[in-house]
Image 1: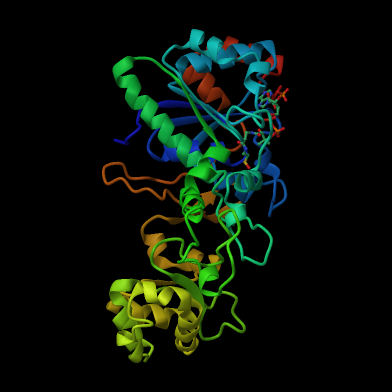
Image 2: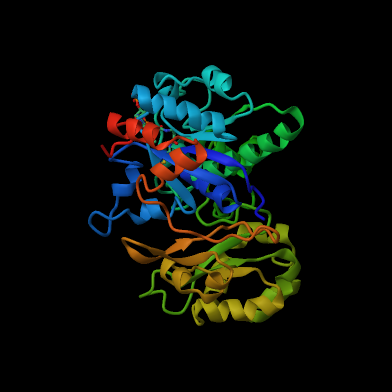
Length: 418
Ligand code: CAO
């Protein structure tokens, strides 16, 4: 028994944001049918390929546990099949550019006529407003959602992060919206529209930066290292480098071997309750009772000096040695792990966060499994579907079409495999 067992999802999503949402729902047990354009499929199937003519890792890592049907929904026969799929589904998820569903002949009002219990969930770049008609990719969302303006170093340009907070982040937001709407439907017996914009999702994840924007209006942000360096603040939340962003100052510090290894660093937090232990560890006992260092407030204007001193100590140890020495003392710190190290980490394999999958065309590859673990709904990660792999199965088993009808649809070219 899986948490979402029996829930039928019509997955009309593509690229990254929508597919991450439906993949999560599939992992929780929903039946997810990915509807793709005949011959082409999701554009990511052929993007960033590492093996000729084989579905890319981009696609395979975002579309586990789904079935695939190809359908040209702009033909009369294709439209009819789509209508039947909508009638049979609990949820339809899409992330086309604004207005695409309407242009296809499937506005919300018509979808509701076909199935008044359906939940239609959409991702767009922006919510209603000046940019509502714009197409959006990951970094545009990061830039318009406040992430880029607040990421990077003070003396550098805005920076985007490698974490796909615009795409995968919004996929997560949408997944929550969908299960919440399913929960509400239990009582109302009615469907509804669920919308998540990528800009809104990024703004939500940048909540603490809007916090700082308002604090800034009352005075300097004393926990930012900029404050300790005596650099005046401007009118908006500045880029904070590797500052912790919370009430406990932190920074990234060099470790042994940093000269040759770009990831030989550790994130170190000078958490107030363990200040004495930090001083002991780095052999700076005089700081424990020195009024200039003994309280969090007294340290704020000296953070650069403090972290430089701690770094003199971390540079004598590997990032793992630093972590091993800090952990037992309750000092929060963590090594900068490279993607190579993460991919080889046995504990992540053991929990199913990193999984090895076998694919009929590409062979074995690594993927990220479900990051949310439900004790009563375990996840088995299955390979992504080949393009149109389940055409006949879906028409026959889900829609109940007979052989003649399937032949008719096939010969019309709506499935693309005439
Ligand atoms: N049969 C027939 N037509 C189909 C089809 C099918 N099965 N599936 C898609 N199409 C059509 C659409 O109807 C659309 O046609 P029109 O332009 O005539 O309306 C067309 O294919 C292209 O769809 P699109 O505009 O969504 O795709 P795009 O590649 O031009 O843009 C993207 C991609 C991502 C920029 C855009 O979809 C978008 O802004 N989506 C919302 C935001 C989002 O999710 N972005 C995240 C992307 S991940 O980085």
